[in-house]
Image (cartoon, rainbow over all chains, first blue to last red):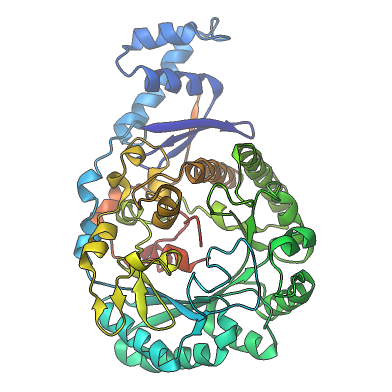
Length: 461
Length: 47
């Protein structure tokens, strides 16, 4: 299977199953299109078909043959029209590592000092009561993670909420406890923190920059865009409070290992303008993501928005290219595609690991498949004292892979999205094996842009 | 004449040989709603 597209003057051909990326001239692009559409054609048939294409009437058979020879070489090499031999591998990685947990999302605070109307977690309460995690529960979660991680060395813990800084002492205590166990357990903890920034001070900056592998800082870009949704309980916008705090934290961090993480909605599908504001503020590790909510929510993206967002993704790619050439590069999370050292095929067909190797822990120690399922009682997997007790539910997540969704089997992007997000699928369709169509549309556009940028980087050096 | 330039990429077919070590970073940990290809292979990072 191949995927061919044109962007920024390049003709790009992705060989889906080998991962090979080819840049081709216009004639070869058309020939590959004919080969893809009519694989049964003989060489003579292909030449005849190509010569019947608009604008190709005067091509010489000699040149078409030359292109076909080069296409044949790539086929023999297994880097064009390669077969999908991975289906039987699906599920093997999860089977091999069954019961292993390597990452926890710790909900240290089911409460928040902001009142963002678009919050998927219902202002941090997750449709339940306000609560904070005790140090005892946090320590038990670390014990559970170490005990469940078997031979895995790298363990990840994300401090999440609500607003995790509303329970900072417990966060510090959990980190200290985990660090005290690292050497004896032979583990390497990587901590991350997601914050709205309201409580950042010198103490937080010192702690975060010492202990957090990554910090995720919530900022939606333009002041008026950010303050439309991200307000306190008096309805006051938070932009003026948090931006100087974020700037101090990032500067103290040496400008590395952080993300400005924004959400774009129906109110700002022109999100590249928000990216530009973040750049003006001095931030250069950026992520902007589409809101995920029900279709009747006022912040939901409609069809017109989706088309505009796709055009914005292309504009963003051009902006990144321009800044790269001006030696002022910035990163955009979803364009960080590592073509040479990306994940192996097992990871690509297994997905993100939610419900199996990655679990969310509530303030009172219940386990859920990931942070986006917390608050949905039927997705409760167990707790950190007894482990996973709802094995039937875990089995559903274990069997999720690229090949468990019929639509994914025929999709060119399947080895990049790995079947997509189970939570998004559930919230959009009612099934973790459903297809979140607008999410797929945007994902495919992002991958096209990312491959385009990486291909250009490769040829420009 | 060269009609095709191939960009250097990891061969996914060959990447099946190691059986998957499972040490690579879990997606949602990196930065929340639209998660794999932008992860890096842990083994490759240690080269």
